Length: 70
Image (cartoon, rainbow, N blue to C red; front, side, top):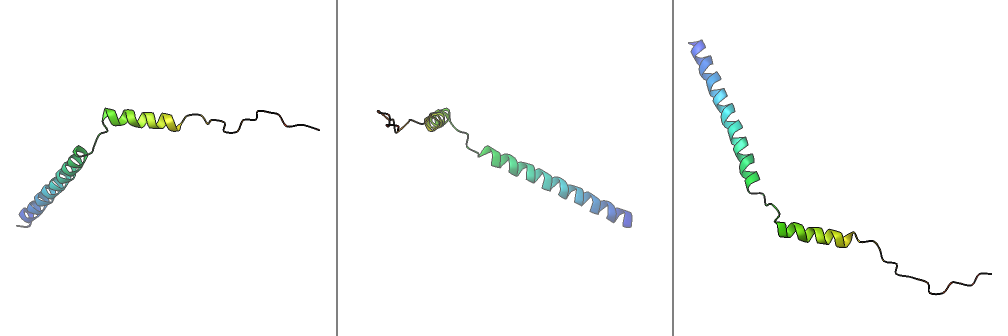
């Protein structure tokens, strides 16, 4: 009788383990399927914005005349 009880408990725990593992994998797959992927248009816009930000600095003060030295 005890062997049968142990066998039933072991079988139910393996079923529970399988069910939990399957549920976790299914949840991950569903979450990944709803992730937004950037469109080509958005990628191009992002690239132009980054290129605009990364332009070299323009000199704002340029001396037309040199200062007299003593």
